[in-house]
Image (cartoon, rainbow, N blue to C red; front, side, top):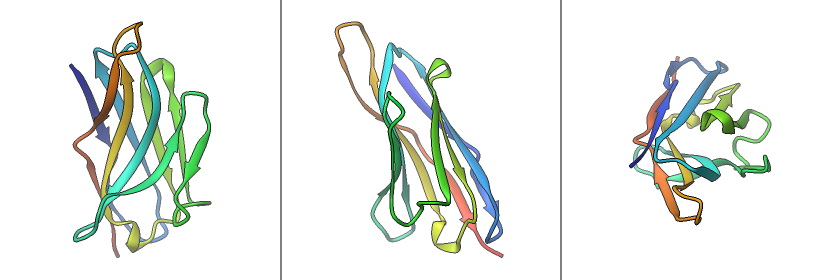
Length: 121
């Protein structure tokens, strides 16, 4: 069993900052690419940022220069630092990780249940 648990969401004013965390636990041998996705009310889930096991990052254009994704592989943890938040960043933020469960490389993508972020004055 593998679990991904997000934390750090909440209510913040426009221009404010939040840092999200995602921790993988359970039967984790290794983790490949990890990513943050978000889904706003009435909209489809969209990619926010991803980070590979080697540290390569990629961001949605809408968050470039404001959000920073990082990971601590020793702790099976991923972070999303969000600065200069805007009302349009309001969404439920989900963690996704490609988890490998054994030395043979068996694994699949897992999702967390999400943490809500509301940007409002």
